Image 1 (cartoon, rainbow, N blue to C red):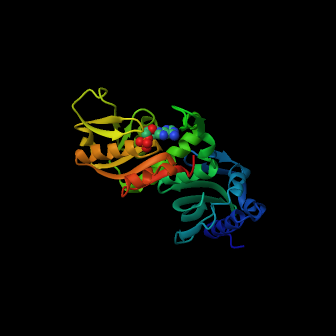
Image 2 (tube, helix red, strand yellow; image 1 turned 120 degrees about the horizontal axis):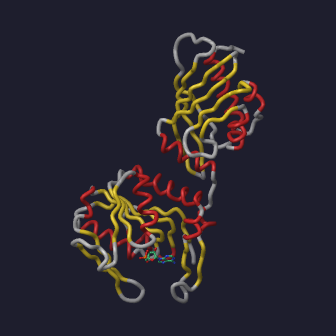
Image 3 (tube, helix red, strand yellow; image 1 turned 135 degrees about the vertical axis):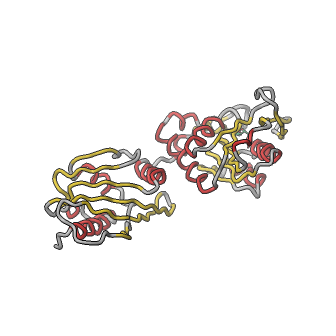
Amino acid sequence: MNTSPIAIVEELHRRQAEMYAGGPVEPVKELLDEGIVWHVPGRSPIAGDHRGPNAVLDYFSRRRAIANGTMRMTPKGALEDGDAVAMLVDGRAELGGEAVEWSTVGVYRIRAGRIAEVWLVPLDAQRFDELWSRQASPVDLRDHIRDVPDFPKPGIVFKDITPLLLDPTAFDRALRDLAGHARPLDVDLIVSAEARGFIFGGALARELGVGFVPARKPGKLPYETISARYGLEYGVDELQLHVDALAGGKRVLIHDDVLATGGTCKAKIELVEQLGGEVVGCAFVVELAFLGGRELLAPHDVHALVRFEEQ
Ligand code: AMP
């Protein structure tokens, strides 16, 4: 085998691709120094510094999804033993039925024909983190949503998200998925109504690095307000925003935990539009599709992490 550092790393990638496709781990291990140190970024279960061939390999060999990694760049010129090789690695995979792509700079230090140290440097750290956490924790959010029949009144099946909030992995996953949807929308602000809307709403704003606007029931907001009324099954209700709520920007994402009939969300859209804002999307954890909320909110973009087609 060609023992130039570049050839070794190229060989590593070739063997890794086979491993991800279900092939053996041993040929990959052969290329790794016994004392190899991995520097892995992010918040995945293997993030941090690890020593030894198995430390990270075991994890990767079980994560077949990171297939088809292709290299786009190799450094020019001769390299000595002990030098580090940097490569831009494009990953492409199907994760949870969704096609995803990411780019990472891998830096590999070669000693005596084997890889002795690896740094993974994601170009978009947040995105990389998100993908890894998705592979690391295949969470089915449905398992964390509890049906409570006849609450708050007979005939209603209440979708209770408190079990999801209680599980940090599920909470994190839901939040990252909401953020992943929102990021390309170039949002300035998140608008959510009390009380459950505040839980994800505030966290989502923090995750995206944008402002948060609370929509509240009458009498709760201390400063000057505007109002919108909306229909409930029995009677009407009202939501308010501060008049200066959109001072942080005009592109608004509306969030609530559950989309039912869509009445509450429509009221929030009205409030945002009264203030001259643009609603660029409505994002929910749960959608009760059989209640037609999506149709009521059209043509606004509606996104939900979990859809229930029937009660
Ligand atoms: P909507 O009918 O879409 O205006 O929903 C009204 C509010 O009640 C929203 O904040 C929803 O989160 C909540 N909600 C309505 N129906 C349910 C349900 N079955 N389970 C949980 N929350 C609900």
